[in-house]
Amino acid sequence: MTIEAIAARFNELAQQEKWFEIHDELFAEHVRSIDPPNSPYMGYAEGKANVRRKGEEFVEKIEIVHSTYTTQPVIGGNHFAVGRGMDLTVKEFGRVKIDEIMLYEVKDGQIILEQFFY
Image (cartoon, rainbow, N blue to C red):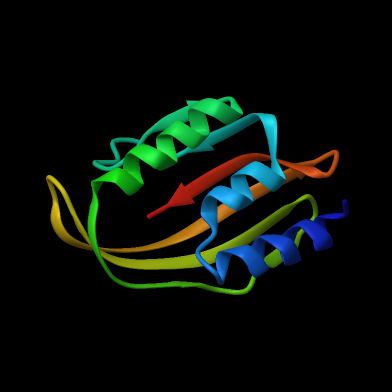
């Protein structure tokens, strides 16, 4: 799969809020997931099962989804990025608004890195 095809499929699923389908379909077994240092929400995970668990743990904390959006991907070399906004009520944090850049690295037709900047 080319990076263009991966970014297009990612976008198709992201617009439907199908994040675990993105994980199952597009992530490599050795994928890494990195949040900003000292993030109050999440941290680092490595390996497909651990990255999925990281996502599931975050979803379990969400009490109310007020709004979300994901921008169209921008491709550069073997990376693509999207903007993501979430207005959520989260256990332990209350209502939070997160505006972030989500960066993905692709190698051999799979996503090998997701990194979040917020």
